[in-house]
Length: 315
Ligand code: AMP
Image 1 (cartoon, rainbow, N blue to C red):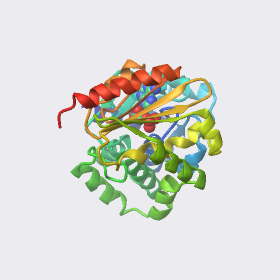
Image 2: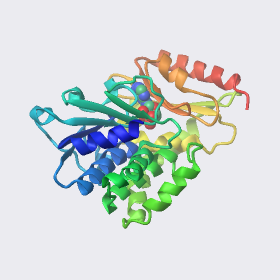
Image 3: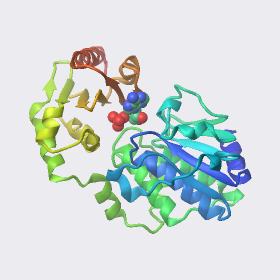
């Protein structure tokens, strides 16, 4: 079973480098940092590093390490929460001696020497907690900081235990994680507090979304709009769920104009949408996925595809 092999590999290697996907969210950082804390607390003599670009809005979930290429020699590399190799943050992930993939997205790119992919898991952080449970006999020990990070990842990827991916197991693990000591209100503040600019842009989204008869909704956040609200494209992550409570919306897309691409952020409450993301070279989960397109014409094509998926969706 791959979990056993992963535990063996962790026991075996002295140097372990943990990667995750670009543009990290709480689950990417939570699983990455939570795994690091778990290994360091269980095996204090090992050198464990986390790498990738910093995400300033999530700095409360830890800082990245800056390591030389030589550190990868004879190292075990673990990539968390990343479906396809090109989306791994820090392209040196292949420089190690062994590569392990731990992820809960559809396994579109089965990279690595060892893979553990569980699409039924709510989050990769949930999987890391499971790894800890399996590793207890091998000496795995949880600490408060690991628990805080894994809890953050679970909360982030389940939309505070709201999305259908939330299972009995998710609640069970969450209940065990909260028995550790960490400041839960501070964690929620970090993930969910928004600046006044974001709050106002939320208002713009709620005023300007389209709604088709099929239940398809879309919003365009052009560079001009973002400038008007004093926001960078990277600061819009907290806005994707804004339309989730609007009655009649089955699936929605938010287009965010970046420097040279338009980011496509798709969400659904029923129709499967990751096929559309894949069509535009993106990917993700059946109910939450993304891609990038080059022109506003292409965004129209994406909206039409989404409309079609909503029209043919049978509840
Ligand atoms: P986001 O809208 O960025 O929060 O992404 C939602 C989900 O889609 C996440 O699970 C991402 O990993 C995935 N995703 C977003 N953009 C891409 C992309 N360009 N390629 C593959 N997966 C993506």
